[in-house]
Length: 387
Ligand SMILES: [Zn+2]
Image 1 (cartoon, helix red, strand yellow):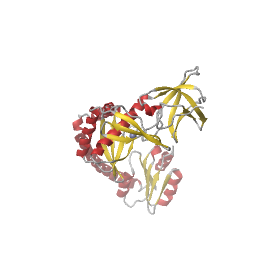
Image 2 (cartoon, rainbow, N blue to C red):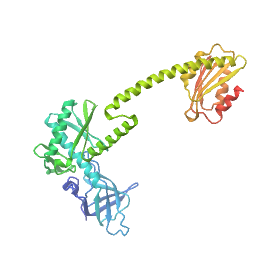
Image 3 (cartoon, rainbow, N blue to C red):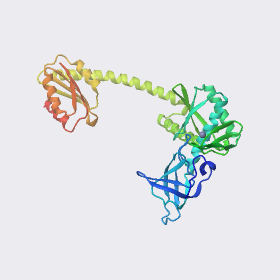
Image 4 (cartoon, rainbow, N blue to C red):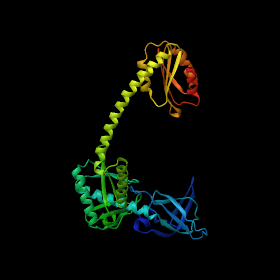
């Protein structure tokens, strides 16, 4: 009977640089939507210690099609590494597994980066109480907030430790029934930490660490960071984004903030001019409505591009009307608003509710409502009252 290697002593943990491994299938169980497979050993790291699971492919020797079977997830069941596959394998068969190296290397850069960052902070008496490896950014959760100066100093210290190319080794310090082989990850003379993850061999392989910003969390402080290839990828995408902002604002990076402030001031001035102009227009429209209602029972004013605020301007300017004014704004699926004022509010409120299927509102003496959406033909039907 085949015996599987257990977490703590998996091949990926003993040699984190091994990308391909020939092994045998120990078991394959059909689950809901996937197959749960355990191998004699594995180069695919099962999620743990803050490090996400590896992805990869399985090549079958007996398969003529040579289509690799995708591994979409690897989790621990106790000490067993359980791989999720999209199609089944046969227990006992020999296979070749291959890790998605770009994904793994990224995880190693972030994880080893975290160990080094926490080690540097430890020397400053700042304790790491947790960490998270994210899709774009990671964070270490610290027992207190760092000052701007401390962040700058830490930034210099971690990158100096990277330049020193300190050796990183894993020692097995014993065996635990529940946790398996007890692994201790050592960075040069500076740090020893129990960890199940896969790590780089030298601090220089981290490349660089970029400290970003802090976010308070329940008395702790989350210091966001990224390491390895992510740093240059981020620098490039940030640079591209700044360039497109510059192009949109037609200015250089140094001038973007003052340019935005100028635009905000200009917008405020325009809004105030617009409001004055709207009020002037409202006075004229109210006068026109009052004149029409001297000889007519009802008049409908429809302003598709205006809002409720404008309708209120108009309403405020209306004198004691001889007839009834129905004021509408908005259009199509985004809806709008309705105000009814004048002599026969109740009568026309009933008519409005019959005409506009999605209108809701109420009030005494005047009627005010919202139209969730205008359905086709509704406005046209209301405007027929003007004929
Ligand atoms: Zn770790």
